[in-house]
Length: 165
Figure 1 (spheres, rainbow, N blue to C red):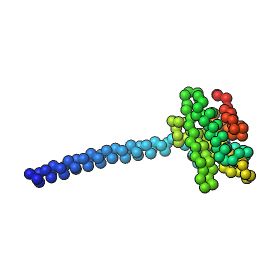
Figure 2: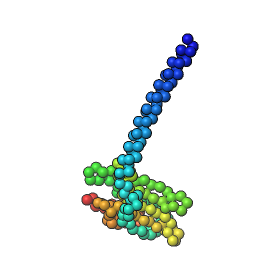
Figure 3: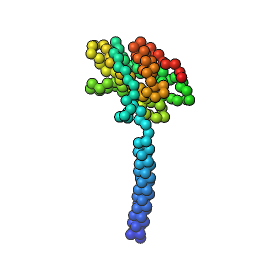
Figure 4: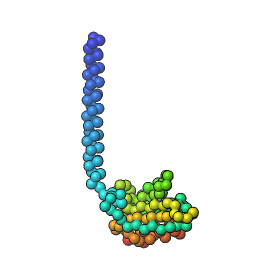
């Protein structure tokens, strides 16, 4: 009797193992499909062949203050503001470590991999100054007028949004 129970337990364990392996294979298949499909998506400013339009200027504020000003601009003019067709934008903020620039990346909420606008702040030549670089994708509303609005906002520390189109 004891040998029979042992065999049944072994068979159940084997069946559970087979079921887990088939679930794992399904997940691996889904992961492979996701990787293939993500390769087809546009990455905006992250792609090597997309240069975009860029402007660099100096602001009379330290780099963290310039980052806060740029962050407020992105919040007011992109994240909170209502856009045509119900598009929602989001900004990803990162503070640079060990000499790397502070950065804000703007993207559609539904397409986080496609960067539409990049704002970098870093120390300038003189104390209490920041060098700010604003880069846009150069498609649709992401053009030189967007750069001009960002520059006015960061220099004046008051968000100045461009007119809706």
